[in-house]
Image (cartoon, rainbow, N blue to C red):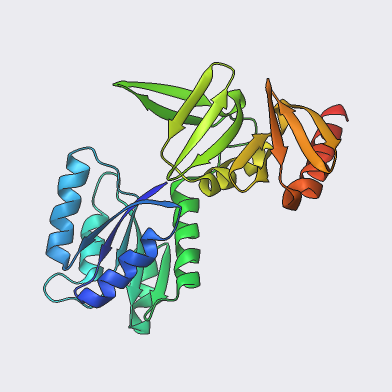
Amino acid sequence: MLRVLAVDDEVPALEELAYLLRQDDRIEHVMTAADGVTALQDMVQMIGGGERLDGVFLDIRMPGLDGLDLARLVGGFPSPPRLVFVTAHEECAVQAFELEAVDYLLKPVRAERLSEAVRRLEAVTCPAPEPGQDDVIPVELGGRTRFVPQQAVWFAEAKGDYVRLHTVDGSYLVRMSLAALERRWSEAGFIRIHRSTLVSGRHVSELRFEGGRVTLTVGTETLQVSRRHSRQVREQLVRQHRGLIS
């Protein structure tokens, strides 16, 4: 998930941008700054302290240090965050993309357009694992970090702002949304069987129809498939297992 900084000298615009970003389940944390100098100071402090900053949503016309000048300074960081410009001025687009901006949004910002910008930011910041490469989720356990490989996960359950990963060795709670995990692991054969449950197709050993109910066996667990997802789950599992046999 992404950690981002929103920068705008107009308080209502900054609050609206931060609000929209916080509604996106791909965003883990949103920080704000009301001018370029404060934003630069915050970034230096964060990155210097080892904190991760994935992207900056940046206004252009600001008093003092404007967005383009700030972007040039950020470009000199050892591992600079990616930039998304959010502005009312069309004429700066060429300069913005010369600074390797991920996207260029015009105000007033529409939610669907911002969502596309977040998708682009996620694509360049959190690339999907290469085929054959097993993704790993780090889980904090009382001062220790356990690395849970994707291949070990039987299924995942939504728990509010968290997801519980179930494996042969036990279950682990990680702070992320089920929707974000589904996007991250869909190419690895993970299937949504319920609004709150995502399963690994490779670990499904049985699909059963009884009395109008559909259940499947994953590892040692039996899980119910919602009516809404029943047909899609069956078709996906058949395709997956045919692929394994062929």
